[in-house]
Amino acid sequence: MFSELRRYVNYRVRYTFDSICEVIYSMIFITGIIIIFNSDKPINLLYFFIYYSITNVILLANEELEFEIRTNQYTNIKTTRRTPMMIYIARSTTYFIWSTLIFLISIILSHLFFNGKFFMPSLHLVDLILMSILNYAVFFVLYTMAIKLTERFKRVSVLLNLFNTIMLFYSGLVFPAPFVSYADVLDMFLSKK
Image (cartoon, rainbow, N blue to C red; front, side):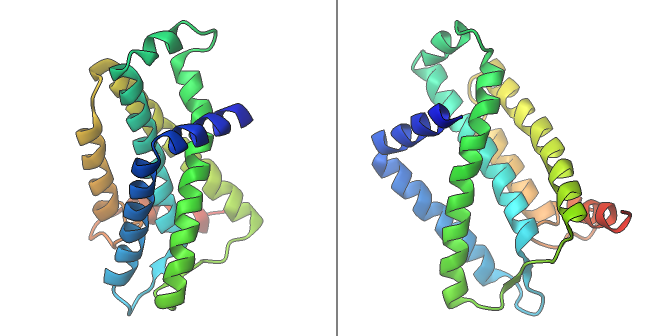
């Protein structure tokens, strides 16, 4: 795990300009969502984090896998003892840490200027465990599908950006949806404990 984290940091350093632009983009995106959100009902920070982490980790994995396919590094990955899927599952932890850091920095900066626009729900330990298990299962299925689609079609970033947009507007995690959404399922799941 530590070697994957070091490898990813080196990758980010090697492409410093791209990394800086990604951080700036993410910070503008997160603070922008907080700014445009209706202040009468503040944004649920936990649900926003779930949306951001799931979609961002999938997009980061896809970006790196497409790069490795284009540069023929993927051929070398396929010859290792571990399968490419196992390598990318291990890398998901690193992507999650990177996404969490960006999210936390953005929220801290947002809190300075837009206090009261978001709230953090209080969860008991059991709620937190249930929420983690459910979201990890959903993430794992979506992540595996994204990796398999990328391996098969070599370039699926447009499809994943479409998925990101659908999650943003219709999952209920960020904006309320007029129908039963993923956020409603999470609420129901937590209320039945």
